[in-house]
Length: 607
Ligand code: AGP
Figure 1 (tube, rainbow, N blue to C red):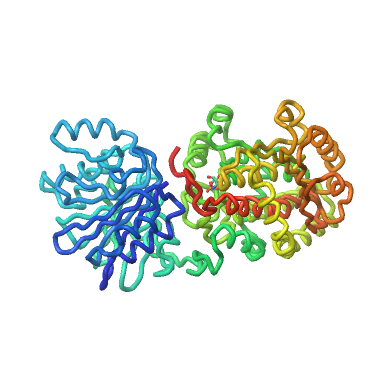
Figure 2 (tube, rainbow, N blue to C red; figure 1 turned 120 degrees about the vertical axis):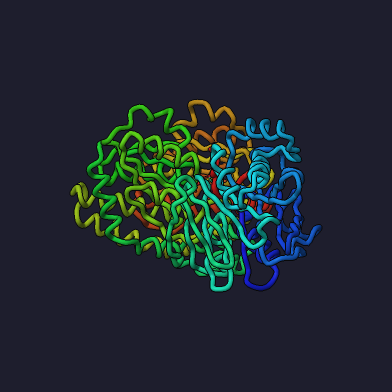
């Protein structure tokens, strides 16, 4: 889950552009960073372990000559986050430099083979086999592009690579299999990157590189070929309607806070999706024999909430499934009547794509909900919707979660309408309330932020948190738990509140913080009972409640009151906002970086 970047400039030095591009990709991994440039027939490399800013402060990553170069920001998979494992990796004579995102599954046998023929390895990474394989082919007299082609033919696993060499100092060779790779096309420069935000400030014209393709970037432009049959592929650039400032902090201290505050705007955009795709998806859902809602992490929590939605509104039973367990749990029972509604903001999560591949092989129908145009999910789905949240840079998903919930709600309402399970009046009310959500969220952010800040300060030293909810509130509780854990590193548990008395309650002692998600819905009475149970054991009750909920106000030690007056099926969007803010301010209180939490990366492209 690294970020790779490369560029060829007509004029000027490439290093500063590469540095800037890597900064835009740092959410993909921040264990180490490195840049390689070419000038004349000399290769210049700077790399070290650590975040980009700290490495730049020591090494000045912009002080490398040459108008062409590549760079990498790393999320360690093979080899600890030390300098020697930082990319770019080179061959024995430092004539070939490679940056790579992905995992080379057969690197061990390739390494043995190369070491037996005299190659010396400097790192513990899987990636380093690539420059040595290329070196072998160059020694046989092949051109750089042919050498890269032969090298990638030997690789098993996933890769997006960019290669430069003193042998042919005016070109960059890139190739892709599974890991994402996009080109940026400008009048006076060319870019290659793991993600569009990396070059968005330079151009909004992009070309998606597909699996099994190899690209040559040179002053003449870009040339795409299939690695296997070497056929030329013509593909015109697409214009990306993301404004460059969407990938910047716009005055906020962190991307996460900016993205939390962006939600009203993005939720309005999510209400303007193309009708025909929503209708098409609804038809597929209506006809399906069985429906699986498949995703990872936060996207899975959106699926969990949606499973209640589809049942309550459209009388459609669905199976929310954690993608990495899909094959084991359902792999054998999937068939031509099965439908997978697959949710992934990045559209590149390897576990999710793996589940899709296993289901596709059994003729299941794949529907996709993603935030990234041109992502792999958009290419494997029969029908897909791009949720219009704009680029999400903060590793912790926030705005993409609420947009996913909005799209899934729209689908459930349409299906209810199609199936005539809910009266026209109710449908209209639901649609009107859906339209009210952006303003409601705006009010919650401005109305609760200060109070949440105080709560974070009050509870910052607690060593564990519980998040409890019932019905759709239990999906929100799961998401609140994940947000707090992933950015403030506080061990946290979430349960359907009813389940807590079957074991977890044994953890409760005086002052143990329990966060309750309490929409005023059919579960309200029962959740009061659960609050009493926890309170009886000395827990500190923190309740997210609807405005005017005096019953729970009296019981809670602290509460966040939100004004929604929404039907229960639409409650997850507003009720998650205070939990996003709690995680953010708790991270600040505990001096953690909300944008780049340790050990995590934005898009998990390895299994
Ligand atoms: C959420 O904050 C995390 N970044 C992570 O759990 C994420 O939701 C998960 O990796 C799924 O990502 P996707 O939506 O891009 O597939």
